[in-house]
Length: 406
Image 1 (tube, helix red, strand yellow):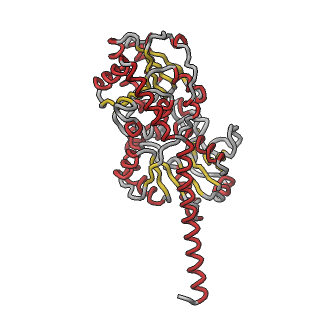
Image 2 (image 1 turned 90 degrees about the horizontal axis):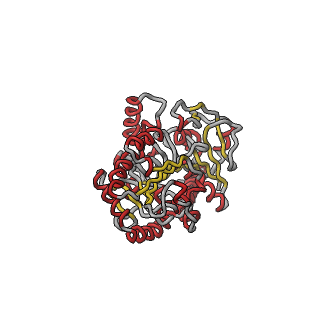
Image 3 (image 1 turned 45 degrees about the vertical axis):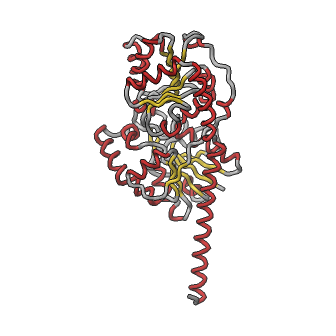
């Protein structure tokens, strides 16, 4: 089948959504399907994968971390014509992409799928960076209460990546059927027993216990909370180290915070790491930690689980959906003392880390991309079959009318 992936933002911008689209595109193509990505940017922009269709956009006036983004309100004629040849389209943002899918595909009977990747109530201001803060908050609130439920009502299939996101959609008034399909992860690179980096690469020793965070260094990730908890733990266990893998708009502030807390010798910032180089970083650590409470799925958490690391997190949507407290990791309340205490439990008990790491590795298999792509394809096929049945029904009705039969 011909599948159109529709995204407001795509590569070279790096995010969980762009990684998701790229990975699903790869595996759908391996299954023999044609996949096109419809997005915005320079028409002559070089892409490392085929069939990325870009319509002209305008650069987003935003912080440096978003400097590579262009957005637009319409597709050009060439993109529109190609879009209308798709068997099915799958929108990954509820703003521009879903609106364009409803405008160009709905009238032609092309089934539309929408995956709600993000807690837009928590991310509205970050997404609407063109607007003043109070305007962004107002638009976010109005969006939650009116726009998203009405858009979902017009969509053929709404997908939530976790039970908590499905519950969130229902809570804000989405009363259409919502299917729960977890984000797929390419577990193959993380299943391998990678040779870890030498601890000396990060200024640590073989006796140190390394906690790793992988992800964007953004305000929504709650990293100051993680640093403050780490500060308390390292006072009791001086052999504790923290590795922050990633980059983002908060990096300068976080580095200043580490200096001010006088823990710079125990915290390392790696900067942005190429995705294919991530497994050795995870293999170098003993515990994976996140203090985020705004996740919808937690891709980096699943990757750490697949690498055999126990997870330390806060009991919240996304993280709490994937990590079983006391089995594949430890979940604290959203409280500094609770989080620091759980960190100390893992730091001080090697056997606990190893047993939870093994359970985490097993639990990660539920998110294998091969499995989730097949789940998505089963729904694509169902929607296409329903479209055929509707056409057959209409054809039969027209035939009866012209033949004079009731």
